[in-house]
Length: 87
Image 1 (cartoon, one colour):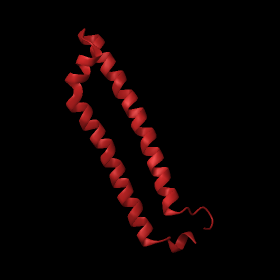
Image 2 (image 1 turned 120 degrees about the vertical axis):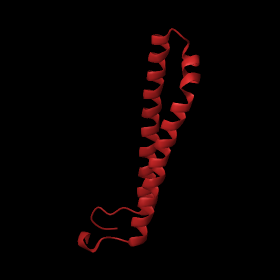
Image 3 (image 1 turned 90 degrees about the horizontal axis):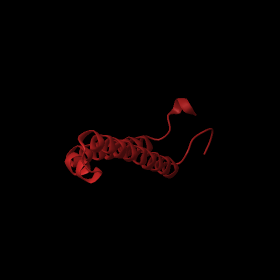
């Protein structure tokens, strides 16, 4: 490999690591929101989580869909090969 080019496997590994980190941050944010809703509504965190489950599932699905699309983009780029301008 030359000048800043990485393999598909390395790019995929980095993409997967970034997705895992974003999922972790996203889930931490969601949990914080659930706690705030529970406190504001005077209910348990578990009850708030149950009430919010459909929206939480939507958010998780959206994050996973973004990752899926990024993987497709990466695969397309890998099939096209390096850009001659970058060589």
